[in-house]
Length: 144
Image (cartoon, rainbow, N blue to C red; front, top):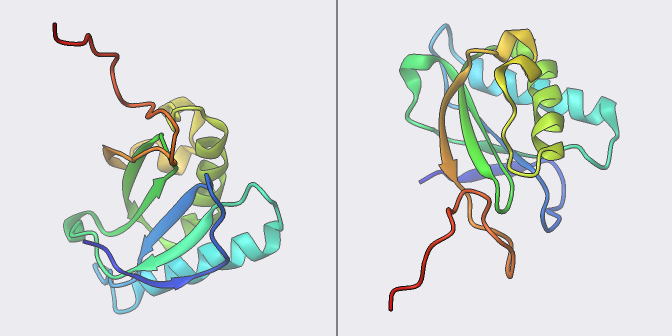
């Protein structure tokens, strides 16, 4: 379970959320905190309404992959990315914009910043906003 320790702005229904692990220290103490701070600085400079809501979390349990972040939006696939560094924060925010623009959350490798082409670790279902449809569900046939 991940615990939000800081939120950069007020939550809006249906908004893309970017979660950055702040406890990562694969290459040195404070790696995750620096990645979060760099992402926050990129967002403050962007000033876009389409910017993701940024959350700091304590751990994704993906320590062998280095700094990690997850992105999720109601009814879309969520994604966990690893091998991140503070220098990639701008690319992470660019990826978040492409994710937000995608109806399912899918951003093909060729559409991601080059530095994130191989950063994807896993994808996971995210529940839809109340009353919405979940993009990851396959149509089912009712049992008779």
